[in-house]
Each structure stands twice: as structure tokens, then as C-alpha cells.
Image (cartoon, rainbow, N blue to C red; front, side, top):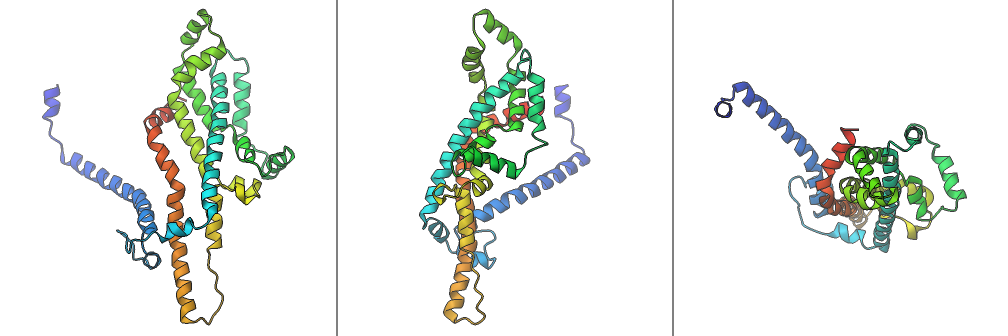
Length: 304
């Protein structure tokens, strides 16, 4: 049978099908990859060339002026460090809340399994809204603190459901019964058996929560008023707004006109530099969790 399959000739229809699929996938790849490539080459090209649309396939007039302008102000470095702190603390809180909750709800011998799960799922469709949440944050004394960015989102319901499905499919009941026969309690079983077997889902939750905290700026825009506590994303937003040029003069000298064109070009170039700067941590972390990514996601989505 194997020898027959090896010598089977591909029909003309098979070849045409493969060519069409290859072309479609190539176009999709280019549609996704080129914008990323364009951002990189634009961030190191001459701002005038970028603004003039001359940068298409390769950088023109190599320069790092965009990065220099971004780092001229100390607020960027401070925002970067703040975002690292918020992300680290936020992910730690998320994992400390999500993993035990998911494991408890995955246990069939837990009597309140279904009611609590229903309560969590209900919050995905019905929420209190922005103003009630703000009032709660204010009245609990979290306003203008790091915890205002961490505690309100301590548990992501979707992530909890994915983790619960992981525990349901990977921690068999026989293992729990065997542990109980050996005198192992629930807490000890969770710490010494469940957690070591949960590397894949922990990596997935780490990535999901980490990217969410790193890219978040709206919560800081609402709850944080002290600029020394601004995260990087909010600082980058403010820098872009501050560097917007709005010159209303109708009559300008040649020097003023040249300066306006330079600032406009530099502003456009800074946008690409800011994208690269804010994307570096995610790009650095992803390779370390990539090997767990497919396994964790497929377990939570297909078997759930």
C-alpha cells in the first residue's frame, strides 16, 4: 500500500490547488508582515523621506533621531519602569487568583462548582459600567495607586475558563484519589502535584495577562493623576499629543516653514519609534512561552 501511494501521480487539479493555496497564504503573510517591516524601517529612516512616502522597501538615510527624541525626556524611562512594575505585580496577582480559582472550579467534588461558574460567566455579559467601577476604586482608597490598575482585573473570566478546562482534562480523578489514600490533603496536592503539572497553562496565562497589562493605558488614564506613576503607554500617548504641531500662521518665513516641515516629519518618525519601544518586552518574552502556547490554547478551546 505504501509503495502504491508513493508512486501515485499528482493530478493537474492537485497542482493547481496547491498553487492557489500557496499564493493565498503568501498574500496573507505579506499583508501581515509588511506593516511590521515598514514600522521598523521607518523608525530608522530619514524623517523627511518617511513623511514624503519614499520609504517603501528599505530604509533611506539611516538615522536614530526618532529614538533620541523619544528618550530626551525622562518620563519615557520612568514610564517604562512603571509599566514593568505594573506588569510584574499585575501578572503575579492574576496568577495567584486565577490558578487556584480555576482548579477549585474544576473539581467535581466541589458542591458550589456550577453556581460560582455561572456567576463568573454572567459578569462577561453584564457589568457595572465605568462610573460604578470608578466610584468603588475611589471609595476603597485605590485611586492614584498601582493597585487601581491591578485589583479590578485580578481575575479574567475567559482565562479562568481556559485554565479550568486544562485542569479538568489533565488532572484525572484517579490521581486525586491516590493522593488521598497516601494522606495528601487538598492544599498539599495542589502545591506539590497540580502546580508542577500546570506549566503549559501557567505560561499561557502569563502571556495573556502580561500583554494585557503592558498594553493597557485606559485604566491609568482614568485612575492615575500623578504623572510620576504613568505607565509607558500613557506616556507615549502624551508625547505624541505634545509633539503635534498646529501652526495657524498663514504667513511664515522660509525658516519657519522649514522648521514646521522638520517637526512634522520628526513627529511622524517618532510614532514608529514609539511602536518599536513599546513592543520590545512582548517580543522578548514570547519566545520563552511559545513552546507552551499551542498546547495550552488548544486544550482550553477545543476540549472545552
